[in-house]
Length: 426
Ligand code: EPZ
Image 1 (cartoon, rainbow, N blue to C red):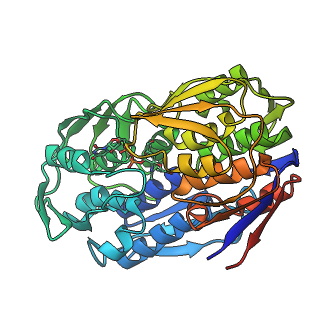
Image 2: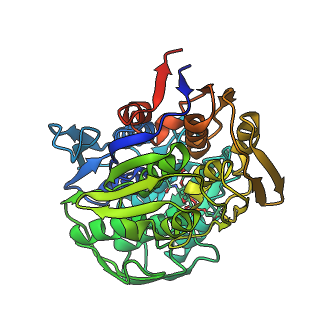
């Protein structure tokens, strides 16, 4: 298995472009199931999760056509998705277990084909990741749902009907499944306590281009008037705010100054506010945002929460930053029950972190020392790379297949900005 080898101490200077958001591309790809016409997605990211979803959609009968590399930058592509006919309504366990976002085919298959058989995703490193709220929402739209031998069996032989959905907990993919199903349900659907993440907004905007009638986009209350069918459309995927936030924080870790092309401040405001309080400087550029860090950061506290508050997907990266900050930081992870897998690995690098319940107390230390560490999940892996950029000596990060799920050629982008980092093929 590949590893990343990093020798810390080099400040970052230059420009990094982020691709389309993985967590927008995944639901947008499944939206292609809602129509028999072609959905063209531009700024498609090129990461492992996307490849996995493409494989599943192909199995379901979606024809994919990779257009010439007309992407916004050299990491992105333009891809046509055409679900002229649905060849299968089963999402098999061996695919779903590798990529839990496969659950996003449930709503569209049910709406388009009247049935779906989707493996329960199972848990992952950061938590049990249940899908009960997805199923409850689809039942409100008239779906009959059974669980059999680890599969969700969903049926709506007479088609879905509009209903009133209230999510007790904000769920991003739960909102996306319900939203896509409601677009083809007969009548009116309301979704209360809907997720407001920019990726959900991007999906809703694309569905409107496909002919859906959605009000309240960007708010926590969505109103959908179902349509008999949707048509094809062209849509460019919103830039990846988590990739952008990661690269901005990498400057805070290694020092220096980089422009992150594609960074959209309104999608990252909560994180930017905290980072500025810690002492980082930001200035908007024509294509994104420049981050500069000179000197030691001050510690700050963070509570993860649904958008527009601090995103859980930047928690591990922020924790890496706080290991070298001046003072003590309290980081509360309020979304997932086990998203501190990076703590033990950061401690191996010399960090001073104590976890109590769902809060990590990080006491800043003057230096980190390079060591072999192991990635456990997507965002934890990048927090270890960031720590390696600042640690004295050599850090090797193993199991970086986690990293490849959400970042295109991270090591090349950082190396081009002066980092001493290389991929060692294993
Ligand atoms: C999405 O996951 C993202 N994935 C995650 O990004 C992200 O961390 C998460 O939202 C929170 O922002 C994609 O968009 C593909 P949730 P999702 O449903 O939708 C509980 C990454 O690193 N819950 O918003 O699965 C759940 O346990 C990934 O890119 C239920 O209890 O997350 C959690 O505590 C990691 N029942 C909370 O809700 C349900 O049916 C929020 O989860 C669904 C969720």
